[in-house]
Image 1 (cartoon, rainbow, N blue to C red):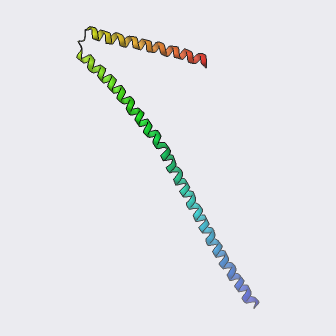
Image 2 (image 1 turned 60 degrees about the vertical axis):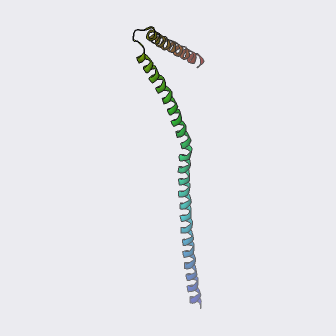
Image 3 (image 1 turned 135 degrees about the vertical axis):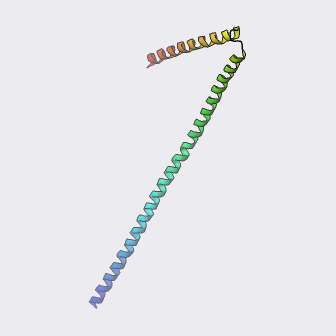
Length: 118
């Protein structure tokens, strides 16, 4: 009887080990699945978070491009329609020259202000 009990105990222990082993494997598998899902969710969240910034950047670029193109193209077309040695062209050239000079002066003032504040 003792041999049979020992054999039964060994069989039960083997079955328990096999069951534990399967449970451990299932747990590891589930944990791996959770980790994989978590990583996928994080990647998707990063993509979604970046999408509004890309849309905003595209909108800003498009608006700036349109303003720049419209301004420069219109100015070039107007200067082509006017006589090259007329008063209107002289006014365009003088206005552009003074605007560049004033812009440089403004930049210099701003640089001085930034140095004194810092």
